[in-house]
Picture (cartoon, one colour):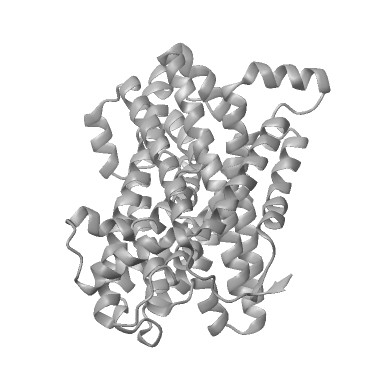
Length: 448
């Protein structure tokens, strides 16, 4: 390990973006509104990919297949919570010039900071497990016959070769980070676009009842403890703890200004970034559950519980195009979110203990649990769902400090939270803690 280096100098690929952003903040830009907001878009799009990662596929498919449209309101509520949380994360980085991990390190005793680092590393590993497995599944589902033949000839698990291919591709993409923030933002945003287009196609193919969709999007209901378990998994898959740290890191040094008026303008533009990116992520999540509800639940296939089963059943129910598009979206999701997860892990380590390891070493370390799962031939979808539950348990350790620090005028200055914002944030944190306690009780004492 090495000590944390100074901030990287501005890369050539970012100069134009920074120049345009500063012209807008200075009031000298002559561009139209859409072109003026463009330099500020990006951080939330990187963060939002974690909200449409393969863990979301697993929980949303199970939720839609078992309970139809009933849990749509959970996705809507979770996405609204995520918007607030990501807004606060972006604001912390802009106002303080530090990410959440660095802020916690400054205010916690050393032993507590190390403990939080360990907790968040576990959360990051659970995240990467879901993302990497999903990416491998996406590759496998595109060419299942080929990989089954290779597995039959070698005796190796059928997901092993797809996992190796995805690992290599992720290493290549991480090299983009050396070119500055803009190329990586552009790549991740493009992959978000691929996922969105795929689910627009799926929604057209499955023809859901939009009146029922609208009703269940706003009317809360549960059907027993299993629906609560899935709802908690959906929450864990939607409000992601590791990207709270990452988002605050993405905004802390992207566009730097000390002028209070410009800081507020910068925050308003980043708020637009969050609203656009998180709205798209929410629509994709809804489309996942709607696909399962309109296709599987509507045909009495409530036992569909794995991504592989969902892929196989889409062809007879909706045609081959549906299953192909589904696999493409899963591949894009897993690839992008796995890259983002590695970036988040680096921010967490640097922030808490002021150490870093080469990105390739971190990528190799976080891939290891996924290869173990594959080698043991564990059910990928069940593993994905359980990983989302782990994420849900990690949420309070990120959200509570975030709310506390963004309500501190000494840290935030003029961007300190309004009292109503702090109250709403506190209620969200309390809800998450309650759901986690209930889930733990069900798992340990009720056998659910």
